[in-house]
Image (cartoon, rainbow over all chains, first blue to last red; front, side):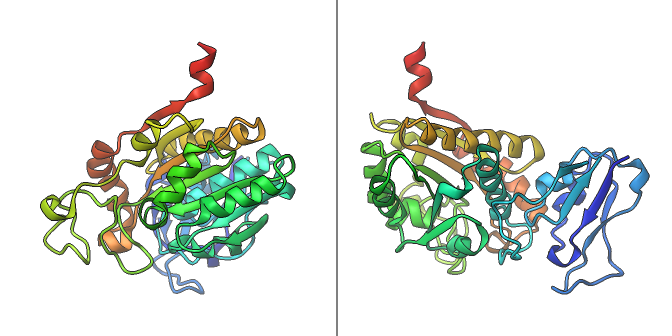
Length: 68
Length: 250
């Protein structure tokens, strides 16, 4: 099963990963603020993730690590 | 099993770039190429002046900071000092490579120096606050062209790959972009080939990456990637502009 790990404090909340996910499983956590003051990206449904790495490929800040 | 993580050739320092800036993606692609070719210990990078001026903090290999535009000249010196043991790349923006550093770029290409040049073209001066660059599109609004770039007195943007392709010298010239997953994968392939060419002692390879600058273009990161498709790519078509080895093999 695929698993995404987020290095939350590196996230700048640009949302490129959100758009890249073919299954639309990511969102910016509007209820959280990281050290940089951004809403960090998070996954809404880990079980549906296939680990295609699209989100990690588009992330400019290497926030996401993908395990499969 | 980990299928995607930060490449070893990048340090664990947070990048200073604006949210959604594609510099981060290109940094990672260069680092992945270095990792996959196993050349981290022998690679020397040359950082430019511009937004990516602090690239020396981000790559794990040795880095040198060049004067504005002079990265290909510095790279020439480093490469010629020990051509068999050093892999030398420069990482330059359009203000650095296509404006003040145009002479160094053209002559390094004409001499077919065995170096790899990564050229980020985002059609604007990012670090200094969004002034018109040599690559700004006709009609593009910037800080110094508030009514849009007027070609009657500002001239036309320079297509670097096409221009260098007229020279006998360069080995490999390709224009790629990083505005979606498929294009990032293609860009990765191009960057890796540019490093492989240097290892094979083939000569000057330049990869132009059409990039975004959400902050100075004044739009969201998502709109900026779409703007690349709608406005940049019609003027800067993607593709391989020169591949001397492939031509000779035919």
